[in-house]
Image (tube, rainbow, N blue to C red; front, side, top):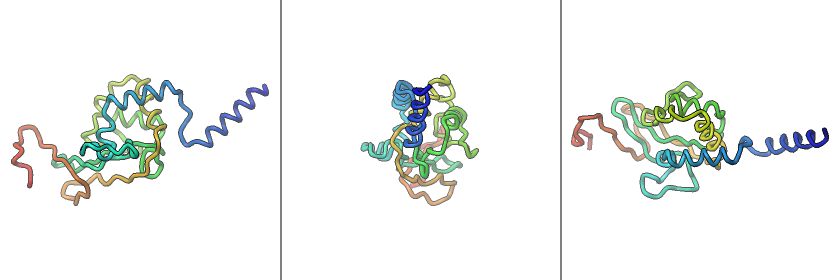
Length: 173
């Protein structure tokens, strides 16, 4: 009985001292592996598209937007557990729902370039592992601009995604 009480008190203290939920290290490692092979770093770490990813801001949000004609410009969001600029207020269940259904906790849809349709095929265990990993990476305070509606002034570097069949010359200069 005494050991259980001491153990529960220690667990409560450890939980309150850390912002990250207590997670199984194998689950975190699996999540890191899945995030790595899925290329999450590509769209969610600044500098990646310029050949110099800023590892101090790993998954802290991109500095490049993607324009999808008729929809706007979308910049890879901060997916670290920073409560102000990232997904730190999201639960693991909300992260899983976002990556598998394309719906954010606030009801907004994820950008069309986010491959949530592929993530929808993950096993429940793998989706949960990704969520747990994201909750346990170093929080990065980095507010990402956008999304930008069509015609809005874009404040970041951007790529334009052309509709199928549209020649590259049709893109504005």
